[in-house]
Image (cartoon, rainbow, N blue to C red; front, side, top):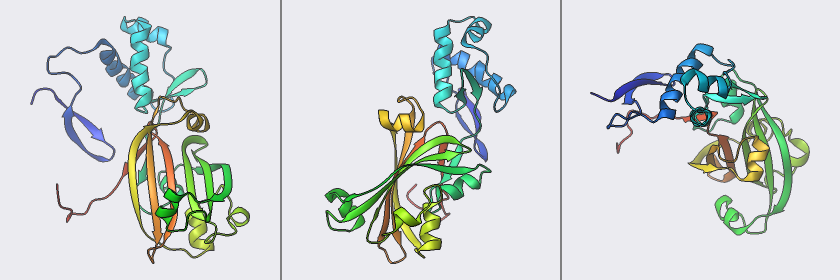
Length: 261
């Protein structure tokens, strides 16, 4: 079929997709440059230093603005990353499973070192909308735990966790904010997770969020909302997590009995 190409999708078998060439056959100049630079990235390998915009413009006989547009898209796609004053080839995206596994477990499975940097742990009266979600009375004290997510010391996300003070009264003194919150709940308090509701959407970070994560405000983010419950069906936590769209993808497993396709 004309206009189709093949691209590998993670560890899945390559599947046919449209190659990006419009049906009328006219390719935007920046897109042609982007395709050539993509081949160069494969040659350089992870961590390879990209030539300067000026050198790329001379090599491909285009303006620096055309090169800049191609590089912007490759940065947004996670193929490149800034390092100091240069640009280098980025590694593969982190795959976070959509399951009741912690961020720590997901990152370790990929051979990366997980970490977290505490932004704040505060106690405040629960507002009515949050109270309805976690099944408490409005005004009941809740904890707000906010941490930057790290992978090999690279800032990759921002996590906000809300839990009731009644259930975790000593969170501020017992919990190590650099460690796994799920590990603390399971191992220290004996709380077993039953199920959870999750919703994912694409957003742009606020100026404050972008500053904490260390990304430009225009970088797309993956926003995950999670409400977790224990084995008795009681809400345990309400989590809002921003993941860098250029560094993360989400995976899940669908059983053979799934219907409605």
